[in-house]
Length: 145
Image (cartoon, rainbow, N blue to C red; front, side, top):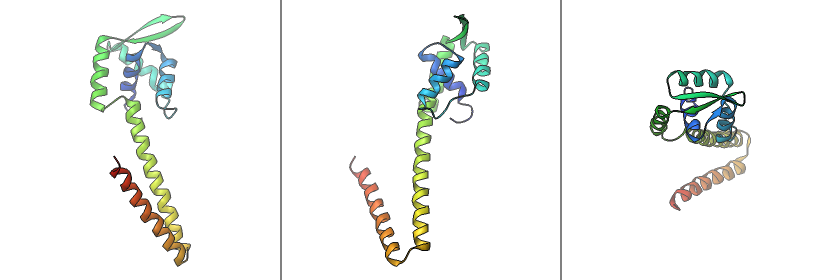
């Protein structure tokens, strides 16, 4: 998650159903596949701020402070999610996919560079053929859609 998305994430998760602070943290962790679990130090003050602004309200249930979204909070959540192009966990997932692509390319680059520096002529030729074929296959992926 990018910095500052906690507000949007809390509103978006509370649109789905009310919950106490730990519930909200768990739901966000679940929605990001474990990639992001906001800290209590960011969740609880933000929930309090949202309540102060009238975007959520809290009540005591079974000894826990449960937060639910207000109509104003729902409107803000909808506006923030629309502006971001989706809920924060979807946007974060897209960013994670980009990082995966960059890591894969870096790994390929490192391996190719090692062959270029330490390999003999035959190994370098084989590596060039592999990379050339990989590029062709990547374009075929796009062409098949």
